[in-house]
Length: 101
Image (tube, rainbow, N blue to C red):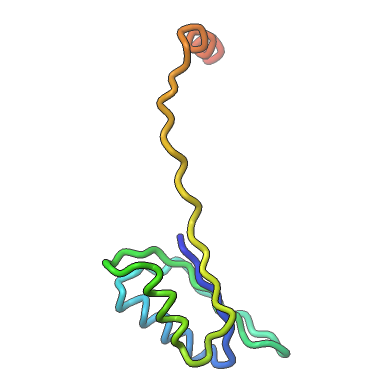
């Protein structure tokens, strides 16, 4: 899942706006959290999966336009590992079969 984190002085305004953007882009919400500090702006963190036609960069750009959003960070999921088609040599296969027996 993708994740976006940002800080804001108005979390009760910006969290519903971020949810509305997710809904309009037809993205799936994974999780959301708000952490408030006394001396810093609140941190909003949203995990999501893009299901729509518009890119994740579009979502990030729309979050950047929120009036109170600062310190915006996007984290993409790690790339999937490529499939391995290495079946080994006949000796390695026989050794593997003996180990499983």
